[in-house]
Every structure is written in structure tokens, then in C-alpha cells.
Image (cartoon, rainbow, N blue to C red):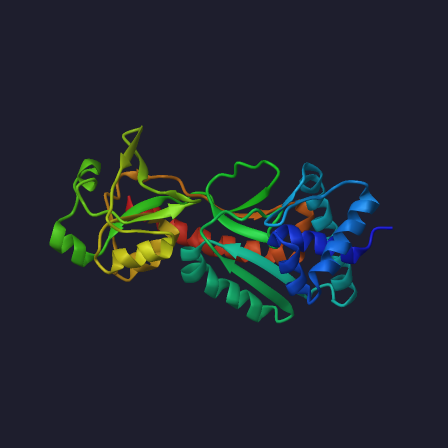
Length: 305
């Protein structure tokens, strides 16, 4: 019979990439984690990991089994929570991954308010601009920009009409002038950041019904989108960001939108789950609250054009 503890250690070893890390997290010895995984492999009659002295990776069978193992643990947790909660009370652990900029400056206060309203919710929040593999990483939901490539994910829209905008600070525009055309933008200092491990130096727009792409250069590059926004506020150059990321700065006068009559690249915001069964009451209510707030912010974007 498969032991729940063995499945738990398998999932954590897969997420952390080593038996030692999983052991430290569970306050066990690495040998105990290794034994648990061996036991699970014997029960399944399949090898789940390829082991070497320096690395640990899932086999094809391990990759196939992992989402079912995660779902098994989620169902057990949901069952435990249901025995200790009333019908109208949210509780349990909620693990959420969000992008760095919108996460810190827009979503954090909203998620904090959500936790205040539901004091029995336990939150685990991760901030990163890297795409979370929500089949492997220990998260229940991830909030991410863009269209999903993986059709096995389930996505609920938060702001499907959101777009990117060009912005710069008043001080920068006073010192360097305001671009009158898209072509002018390439002659300005542009602030770049990496997205999904790639430099976001190709900026796409839609002008007069045509798609235009600019390749921009910069002497300043970072791996955190929030830093690029802060550089723009400090007068270091022009940044091309999601409207949701910069709307508060525009409203406060810290940044100004450039060429507002030209539509920027679509940047839909979604709440992503690996499986519909993980849309718990807490996830559904979090989605409803965030969608209402994001829709209000994106509504201001139409007024710029």
C-alpha cells in the first residue's frame, strides 16, 4: 500500500531537486527521504528519479506521476480542512506566486487585505519574474502575464484587456525631450529587464492597423522588472511596462505615458492553476477580488487614447 508520507517526500524532492533539501525541510535524514522514495518506486513498480552524485531529476514516469501525486496531497488536505471549517469560513494554506513588480506594488496590499478578511488562511507568497512550473513548484496558483503555451494549465482572466505602455519621468523628458514617433524611441535611453530568462529588448506596437516592432538598446539591464520601473521614476530613461504596473505612478505624476495614441502590446493578466480541482473556495474568492480590482485599473487605460 502506498504511504502518504512517501508521496509527500517524493513531491518535495521533485520540487527542491534533491533528497537533502527535502530532508532538511521535513527535519529528516537524507537516507530517510531516499528510503521513502525507494519504497514508493517499489509500490508503483516504476523508477521515478534518475540519480547521480550531483543531480536528481525525474524520469518520464516520474514526470507523469507527479501531477497525480500533487493532486492526491491536495485532496487529502482539502478533506482535513473541510472537517474543521464551517460552510462560510475560508481556511487552510494558500501558496501563490506573483511577478515581482505587480506583486510588490499592486497585488501585495490586495492579498494582504484578503488575508485580513480571512484570518484562518495561511499564506505562502513567492515573488519572481520567472515562470513557475506549477506542476512541480509548491504553489496552488500563479498570477502571470501573457498567453499560456501549456494547454494543460487552467487560467482565469484577471485583466484580459491590459496592455503595455511607454512611460518616462517628467525629469527625463525635460532633459531629453519627448519622442514624437516610434522611430524616435530608439534614439532614447531605454531601460531593459529580463523576462523568462530573455532580455525584453523587442518592443511590439500596433499602429494604423499594422504591427511594428522596435529593437532597443540600453546601458542598464536588470533581472527584476520592478527595478526597471524604479529606474524610470529616477529619470534614467524610457521603460515599456504593463499598464497595471505603472498606473499608480502615472496617476501620481511620477511617470508620463508616451505616444498614448499608439496601442502597446497586449499583456493579459491571468490566475493560473494546474487543475480545476485546485479551484478551492479560497482561490475562487481571491480571483473574484483581484479581478474586480484589476478591471478597474485597466478601465483607466482606455481614457489615455
